[in-house]
Length: 162
Image 1 (cartoon, one colour):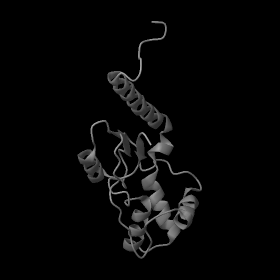
Image 2: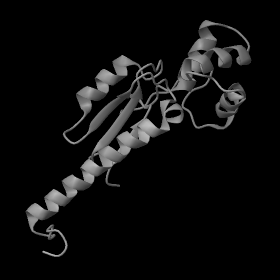
Image 3: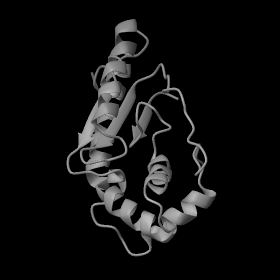
Image 4: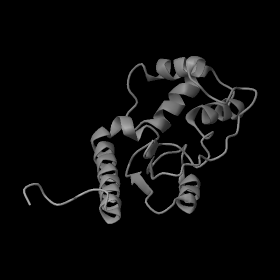
């Protein structure tokens, strides 16, 4: 793997929407539907019809470290290659304290991007902006690899026809 892109992932990967859901259920004893409706409004700028049933399904079938009885923990990811980390500017899950932890752990060549007005699922609601940022990151990686190969003398980078 040459690079890694993380979208809406905190410096602590265990901090996800399901952890917030279970925390909400402990603080505010209510029916699951009510909690999911409230959370849907926090996760999406404009919640779509049927979203609560999709979130409920993800609680049952999705992979998560969390339950009503306990919330799990995970170590931050370690990756030697370049990373692209993107977060939503209005995300309540991966909030500014997580951003700061990311910024402190990024290496040269890594990129941190905040999607303005994006909530937790900003990559769903703003696919064009996300794809533009990812393409720009990957182009920079390709340029870096080409320059390294040219500097080593492994590859001839002169334009075709010269």
